[in-house]
Amino acid sequence: MNSKRSICITFIAWFLLVFSACSVSYGQAVPGKDENIPFLVTFGKQGKPSWGDDHFYQVFFFSIPRDYTQQLYIRVFDPDCGGENDEIQGDFNTKSMFTVYGGKGVDPEKNEASKGVKPGSNYKIGNVLASKVFGSEAKYDNKYYTFGPFNPTEGDFNVRWNSYIFKIVCEGISGDDGNLYRYFLSRDPDNNVPIEGANAFTYEYTFRLWNDFINVSHIYPYVDTGVVYIKQSNFDWDNDGNMMVV
Ligand SMILES: [Ca+2]
Ligand SMILES: [Ca+2]
Ligand SMILES: [Ca+2]
Image 1 (tube, rainbow, N blue to C red):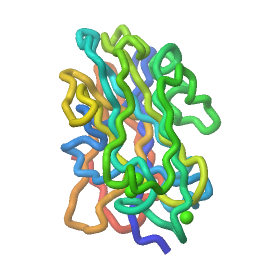
Image 2 (cartoon, rainbow, N blue to C red; image 1 turned 30 degrees about the vertical axis):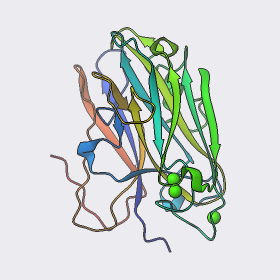
Image 3 (cartoon, helix red, strand yellow; image 1 turned 90 degrees about the horizontal axis):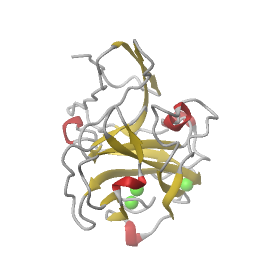
């Protein structure tokens, strides 16, 4: 039995025009400061879907405003799967691969598959800018690992947002434990320093809820001009919480 609480939420929005996009999480911290969500979670691919992760990868995007011309970094907190924070099943045997993508094919408005929502879609299109596999490693436990530096122009340019888009994918390539982690998009390799006007977003959000019933987590679907409705599907919402639309 698993008493921990993970949930996967898929957002699909219908726009009146050609856009079919929807997203969560503003700012550079993922999960966002206002969401009160402790961690993202991705299980190793031998995990059981009933633990809360239905496909063992998670895709996140970062948009960098065009007027930001300095280098940027994507910092991952607790990228290892072991020691603190992570969810053990038997012993820790999970390996997780984090990969940063830029270039053509990353922008989810131009390439639907990039969203990683549809089963079997090739969400890995783009240039691999950096990639690293983490096991259970004290060196990275409860600490940040920093990807980068990247130049903004290594992203995929989106005209409508006037921004360069980067993508980071976490895949549970082996094992059955849950890797809990967070992201921070930073202008500094060693500290979390936000980039003004940058945003994080996703189309499918797998995260860990608090184990107590006092904490309230919030998610913020992005509603742009022309959105007529939002469909939210939840995977593995155990019967031990309440959901409210406010
Ligand atoms: Ca295990
Ligand atoms: Ca850890
Ligand atoms: Ca971790």
